[in-house]
Length: 432
Image (tube, rainbow, N blue to C red; front, side, top):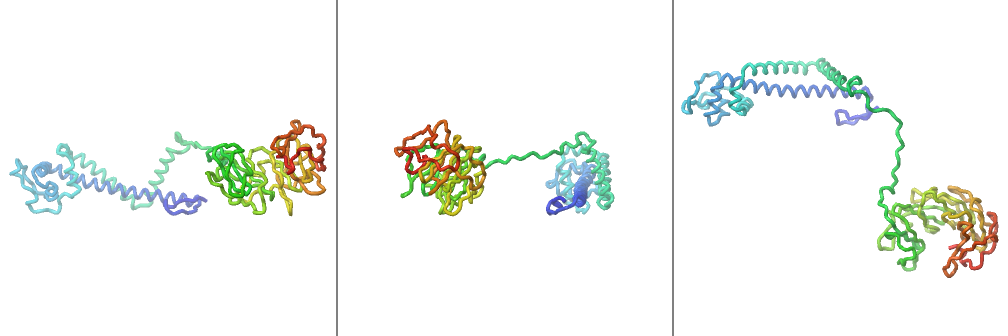
């Protein structure tokens, strides 16, 4: 079945047979309209030819009327062409047909206009035989058209002949008539990402402790002074591009996705992030990150369970976000860090530190994960990844970076209890 416009106006679902019938009916309609139009043209031309023949037979009188009469058009229409008139030698000898009795068999308006629009030189060149020959040819053509319009059989015969001519011109045996298109498997259409339609510009993303987010043009210094609402302060500052996706990890185990180009800019305080994503009021932001394809994150709960998740698996398509870490009751997401290195360092609320190899953690798209560190009381405070050869670094209370390279005391298997943190480790039990 095919959707077609019948008569070019009415939409209808038709079978192939119905489409062909509609096409043939259209060809018949075109043939009839074309024939009638041609008959109108022939009738007009025959009328003009009749006037030319009359003018040819009375050429001297026509020339006198055109030359001497004040109203040659009216005079030509009023002239009795059966009445003989002597050739006028001057304007005084000329007798206008308008002063004589009128006849109803004069020339028509169409005939007179054709005669008057012809130059006198052309009038003299009129040849009766040529006029009669054209008249006879048009009369025969008109008779054929009249027969065609009154006979359906002749119409379909004419249409069949036209279709055969089309076949000769465009059929498979005609020059250039062979099929030029071929059948092939449709190629895969590459989806154009939304980011491709956004002008790429550097931005600095700023998110406050109360969850107000905004951007500043360009890559501003991460420690630059920024104003916040009363009672609020800065929490996350990162460099990104307008085409980047910004990943927001919530304490409820969900990841949310924001587009850099859609974040509020300008000199204001921004907008609450909860107006952009469905982050519950009881949930907080754990981490704000720029999505880098191929990157991996370490995610862990406050109970000490965690795993490795690819960054591409946490991208959400809706405001509701995407569940990645399964948490329940009082358990919350405590850690979300990009993986950098070959070992994992955990610190519990009991200030015990455990270091184990990264390959002891499974890579998952969603779940509860496995136990990172064993606790008798409390839970996980922080976790990070690092290269064992470079040592474990953290910031001391004075803001200085300290690096511990001798870590044998804290190296153990995953899910061990760990040992007390090194001297000088931050009191908030966090690596940075």
